[in-house]
Amino acid sequence: MKRFETDAIVLSSCDHGESDRLVSFHSADFGRLRGLAKGARRSKKRFANVFEPCSLVRLECREKNSYLWIEACKLVEPYLPMRADIEKWAYAALFSEIVLAMVPEGEPHPAPFFLHKETLDRLERDKDPQHVLLLALLRFQLLMGYMPALDGCAICRRSLKTAQKWFLQPAQGKLVCIDHFSRDSGYIALDIGTLALIDYMRKIPLEKTWRLQMRREMRAPLLTGILDWFRYHTRKEIQSVKVLEQIFPSCGIWSSKVDGAAGRRRRLQTQC
Image (tube, rainbow, N blue to C red; front, side, top):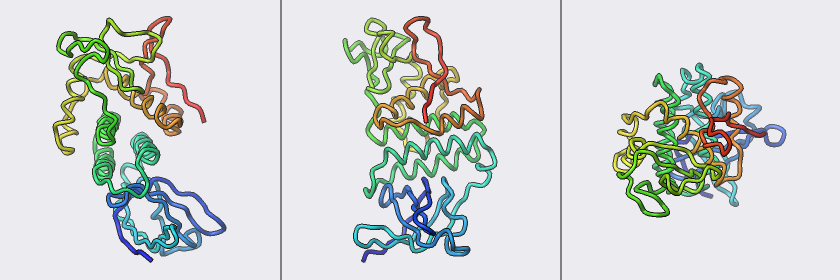
């Protein structure tokens, strides 16, 4: 029987059986974890208020017969100010939803965990939470190996420095010049400055990521592109986007793909 302790961020929890809770976590030492907390719904001391999503906790677990049992869970940081701001809370939930789907289970991968923790810290105190979310998602793509090459046209190999306007197909990670752009293929328009900034992220440590300043008019297209990338690779819809659009119709999560008929922006459509 293996026992261990680890810091973790709560991703989700649900009822299991008559009195238990099935909880998913994100940890530095073990990647994504899913464990059973016996009697958690009856306990008023051992598991009181520790399984709220986006909380930082200290887990004590034992592994037996390929199952993970949560022996104890201590609340380290509940991020209460963030929970009091529904927009920040929704962005935190969106990031956690993507982590839940993309981070492998049971594999140590410290960098995404520290990014996740830093993202929650930044969301709590930053005045521009959507910008924090965008930088965090771009960094997450980089850490998970999904950041596309942004040095020129994927078809003709034209250098990035030869033009100001480029077109990115986020799902497939393909950047093309205007000569190879197709209106019906899901591209988003980005300028050379934005592409250079994203590429610069490869060269800097995590703590310097938050100093980058994305132009406001570029944020919605990029955020839309990253969400399309997530849907493409997971075949899942992002429920947090639907919540955000219901609560904040003007939150800025728009589809900035070039429409084949009119080239206008369209509201991002989601499904349950």
